[in-house]
Amino acid sequence: MKILMVCLGNICRSPLAEGVMRHLVEEQGLDWEIASAGTGDWHINEPADKRGIAIAKKYGYDISKQRARHFNPDHFEAFDKILVMDQQNEKDVLKQADHLHHREKVMLFLPDNLEVTDPYFDDKLFEPVFLQIEERCRQIIEEIKKESI
Ligand code: 4NP
Image (tube, rainbow, N blue to C red):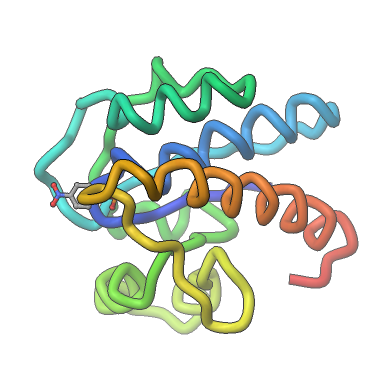
């Protein structure tokens, strides 16, 4: 299974999702590939936001070595699932998809049409966003293992 986590800047939400998901799948001995990318190109090659690195560290995850990447249409072939943090990310990714089988790989990270709030402009949001991402990563692993998403 190859999963790409996508947000806007690839420095706050999707790097948290990447780091947490990679840690959890390794812990379970699953040979999955996990990566992340941003629909925007402002932060390419930068580390994750230091507030995100800090909150991840608090809960036992090291995301400090990850570097931001820009989403590109090659990712549709390279990954099995492209999990987007909000509906704008979904639109920005889907408009680069030429094939139905690529569009079908794209889904919101959260269930029930919920979005992961962008914490970039509010320090207080990093902890609740982290906890929401961690809980959902655990669920996604179980859902994929049961092949229900
Ligand atoms: P992210 O948050 O999409 O969760 O990485 C953002 C980070 C930076 C910017 C926007 C969103 N920015 O505009 O630089």
